[in-house]
Length: 218
Image 1 (tube, one colour):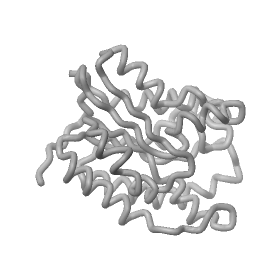
Image 2: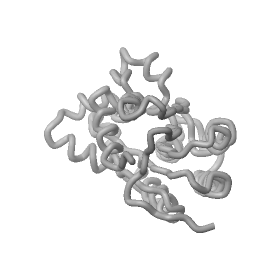
Image 3: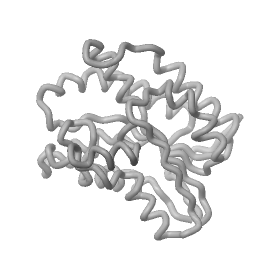
Image 4: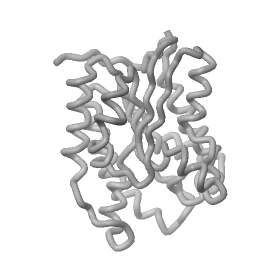
């Protein structure tokens, strides 16, 4: 099945937009741990506010679940994606898959491999939602915890695979790592993410701004 590759995600005044991913996209998780991570106003909520300002008829669903790996999103794809029939999917997933490989002594062992599940996610979307636009947000590590710096090497291997699969399937890609590297030139990383993984409100603003650069309102 053919598809047209755009250089921006196009949003209409009646678009249905879906955010899907892990704890970074999980509204309840970030509200619950706002005292710890300081990220109550997550990027999806920031963008929802902007979308609604453009048009009150835009519908936004946010389906983030903490600790999700790629296979979890695959398992809930029918309920949390396909059945919603979104015009736009903004997906951020993959960092927990990389953590499983990086620190199996601290995280649950890798139960199911990432690559076949991410490929199947794209296959189903392209087959069952052929007109849906996909914006894939690449996972990242913010350099606020020195002990986690070595994780960059493992994460970069996953990021490369995730980027290639996304591009192969006609998705647009935002490399959030590059945006955070740039932000860290002038902002203390601790102000972007206390633990290096879960952004603060300011960190989520960096994400929101990065995504908005890929949006065209029509």
